[in-house]
View (cartoon, rainbow, N blue to C red):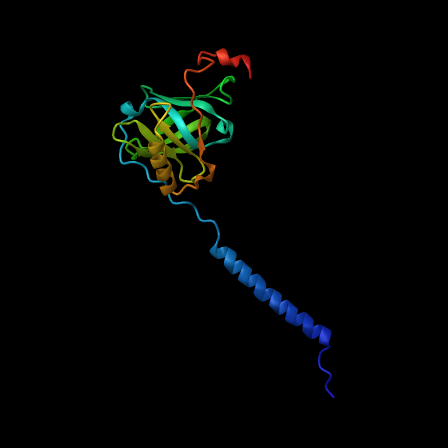
Length: 203
């Protein structure tokens, strides 16, 4: 009588074959679901740099780590003679806390009609800075990145209507952002501590 292979050996081979099929299926699934680079964030057609310069109040943002608790955040732009955009970002982590400032330098990307910049905080790293929305009167803007990691809704005034905010929020979502990280930035003016450094006493 042909005893054939022992039952244990047969079961082992069957389990090995099943495991191989399962592993191949898992690999196929995850290869299909692998992360793909986000589509480039669409910039506005053209930006008049002279009109865009000046102060912009940050109304809401998906923030970078340093600004995650920002109050009274303002981004200010000055166009230098050499074409660079001298930037000052000012904020406080509490309403009367010390003033925090950043001074990145912006550079317009060639061929973008001033709508795409690179923003340099630390040499030699430059971050993408896309003006993705700008109203005709230069009163409201949305700045973002193709990675959809950060975004800033900004306005010329520290307060905007709820209706306008809802509209801008929807625009951010339409750009491909998840809104669960969008934070409304508290803007309370006049400040208890002046921009001249009185808030540097701590708090």
